[in-house]
Length: 441
Image 1 (spheres, rainbow, N blue to C red):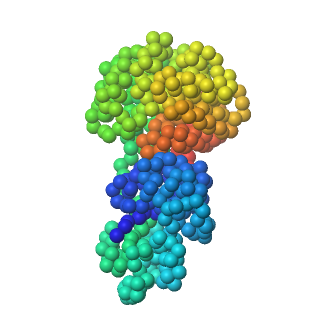
Image 2 (cartoon, rainbow, N blue to C red; image 1 turned 135 degrees about the horizontal axis):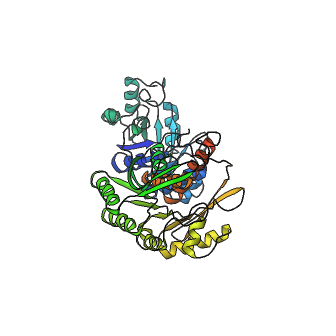
Image 3 (cartoon, rainbow, N blue to C red; image 1 turned 30 degrees about the horizontal axis):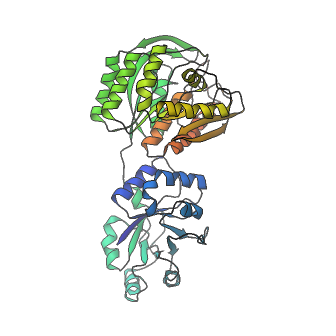
């Protein structure tokens, strides 16, 4: 008997990891049912689940089923016509024996529901008695083309098999397993005011349902008015923190922020090389908002030679990209050329953040695998933007740890940062440039 799962209708952060878990360990087929999602949002799910496309059925945006040669489409009141060029399976939901008889002839399989009391819909009771189900089996209405839906759990599969169902689809029960949140290690400096650095990273990772671990590179005394002291930690101290985390926790992603000298850079690179986290996002904190360099040229050289090639993604802002290239960047077209050049030079994906371009819209440019992606959003006018870069890079690392493809992770991280700025706009954190609000709805 085949086992299927149907997604929850809403989008949520942990969905990719849960879907992969189900496809790897539990179900044969995954039905993606997202009635309110855009085609772009569904496509991002398909990109993250590309390994399993021959086991995915869509309930909406059937053109994507054609585009990606998916396993099937599920007809419903929103989408009742199969694309002419589609060659996969066709399914439909039924709520009576009469509908089953009618649609079995047109479909590869049909759902009959609700067989048991629903887990996901309160008050949605079974429509069939045990005697009625046995009679439907004996009359041939229930056969290998009919799949049970409604209240299906691992505990009642044998009963369904005995009733003659060819398969069973889980909805509520499928998504009730509890996966451990992915561990994301942040390597960065401490901000005593809580707006940037380690503090911003931990807030972001936690808000996005990751488990935050940290290796502190420096302790700063600062508030919304400025920095008054910096105490760097030794390379050994940074290395020992990171090693302690890797030796015990299953680190899925690493975010690297402030690394103040060559020795620390080398120590971090040594750890990344030894333990090989699945994803590494490097935010090269090189240039202050004022334009002043924050690290020496020697450290920049070590950073680009040791850490950049180990990174999944590098996220320089415009001024940092200009330092790396030795020329100014003043337009989106120049950002695209710069991102491609840096990506080729350092053999990694590059996201150039365009927040310093003087425009009402924000445009970031990603170059990954030779492809260029642009992410455009409206600029949010607010003085509370301290820690924006830290938040973005740690959000990308967390979405990657959840299993999202890189361009999807960047898009979702950008949306998260925009909301965090918007929700902090009217708040008052100190007398100067305040922080984002990381825990909005």
